[in-house]
Image (tube, rainbow, N blue to C red; front, top):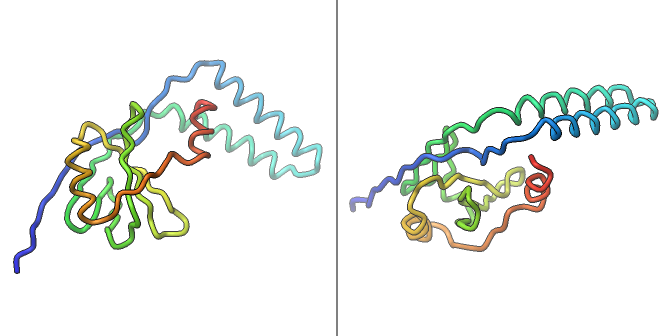
Length: 155
């Protein structure tokens, strides 16, 4: 029996890029230095150094423009960039169309990565929803609290 094969492809930005002002960088620097000084006061110099290196890395990374990710949906799973997510390891999905940066949430069986976010880009959300529901159930998933907090803080 021949298997019905299909492939839906689209491109999307890996995350929503936000312009940050000089004040944002100053605030991160001041907070990092204050935390590092507090760590040194509590005799934890290594933690203080870790805070400063982390803040510096964050400032370098956050200015980087998002890359375009190529996504492929086929009968075996979803390929996002170079990572393959087979349907056999996914519990459910939800398509978030409320925000300007639309995305698909995939709930995985993996312990370390329970919620996978795939950019929707300019793809037809209705067509993808009708296709995904054939393989995994549709279940409401919301943006994780940590991600909402980071968005609120400007990350």
